[in-house]
Image 1 (cartoon, rainbow, N blue to C red):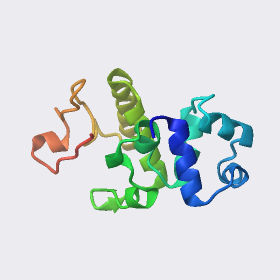
Image 2 (image 1 turned 90 degrees about the vertical axis):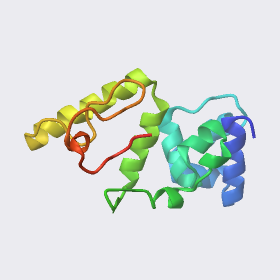
Image 3 (image 1 turned 180 degrees about the horizontal axis):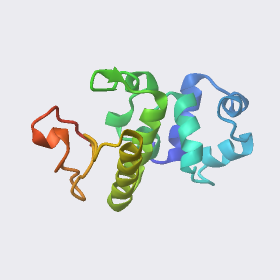
Image 4 (image 1 turned 90 degrees about the horizontal axis):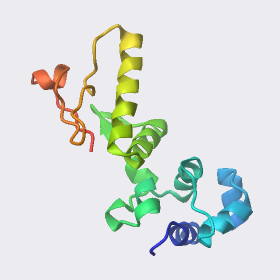
Length: 152
């Protein structure tokens, strides 16, 4: 399957959903779903997230068709951070972050770091201050030999 539309259609059919049922699950119009499936429209991120949830497929797989990314949302639900399972919102944020260009990813991480610092009064976080491109930790607890966190 070489297009997003073909993958969406295949996943919908595999789930046994009609377009109306997918509409009910996602809020997307049946016309929009049809346009996506017939490659007349490329879905926005705002459309991909509910499609991913409803079709129980990762955003990576919907976008790329990479068989290694064909994990279902249930399998993604087993991902954790520091031993705590990731919430659906956290998984969505990670998936959207991966869709951004490296420069935009850095801006997003910098923004989250700023929010963390404002909320906690602490300088930096265990996920902050990455070098552009490779996201290598350069400061914070993990850089001092504490537990390492990796963003891929």
